[in-house]
Length: 241
Image (cartoon, rainbow, N blue to C red; front, side, top):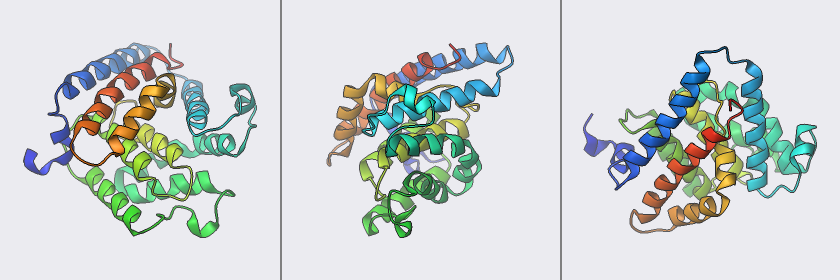
């Protein structure tokens, strides 16, 4: 396709982004290819999702311990993250064909009992709705962008736009994991991107702030280079290891 019309692919031309993401993808592929030589029990996927829920809840401000969450307990944020982890992969087909519905469902699962029913899955305002529609269109358009770049952009857009009444960080990190599955990076969801971000928490939070700042591409560039490092860490923290 014409690269001038491929907004996501154009981000891959930023200095160092393509090579950094390619290096991380090589590491992920090596991990999963090695695992593919043996049977991968579903328990590994379950464990990856659980580790992701624990990490994502912590990043969202939960003070519940990993032990509490493994027992199915914790504060509201922890319980919401656990609830979503059991439903997340069922949304893979929806993200492929109807991203807006997938985003709405993510929030509806997370926000149940925490926000009013008429706010579940609904954008906060017109600006948030417009940002969500644009992101959904980008996901449905053909692109030559690396899958890791697409996942990183989806994460940052949802986290910085904060389109819902609550749980936006959890939504963003869950959507990122779904993109990694739907784009063929990690079809069995064995790496743990949320734990990668938690391990690099200071860099994660500072680069999201940079992404959110208006003007120029420096923040986007910094976020994408950071994301490559986070995905490499996500592979290191996989239960496969």
